[in-house]
Image (cartoon, rainbow, N blue to C red; front, top):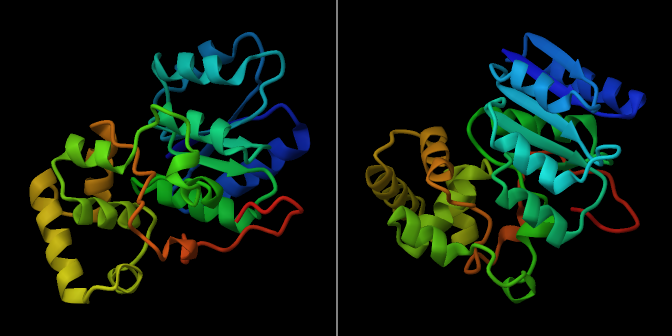
Length: 241
């Protein structure tokens, strides 16, 4: 499949290209300059499966630019490679329905694993966002209750769906929610029937297509172990994971 990388800095662009080329499913990587023809070039490659877009975009306001991109023909999955882990900024970007927000300080292995999750139909949200207390999130942001009503799921089914979207196996989900594996599997089967799907990938895809954010899970106490199947990003002075 074809992937696209948009990044102004040559060294970062080369690194992002290398990561994309390392993904087994990727057969072609197209590099696009973030210039005046950016939107036209992205529309010309709307048949691509994934676009990895580096922020900031020189001379372009990031949020309006991404909003405009998502309103025109574009690659199926949009992943953002950014420099800030500000909860408000990242959350606003995720509300535009991008598939992942990754920091440029992350290791290549983490970025590759997150992009594989995206290509499988999941979403990658930085731990700094998922672990934010609900009362610190800007008013009007979507929450778990909104997603439950939107999808017609119970709170428990929604919590399990969020953890499935993070790539957690049944055993880990059971431990995090302090329920048996049999109970977890029963909830999974029930949410699959509700969404009319047959797999984790289909469930995440249908949920996000219907507008669910899959961000908040206020009743999950063990989410500090977020993304155990993904390598941890390197430590920074401002903790990002």
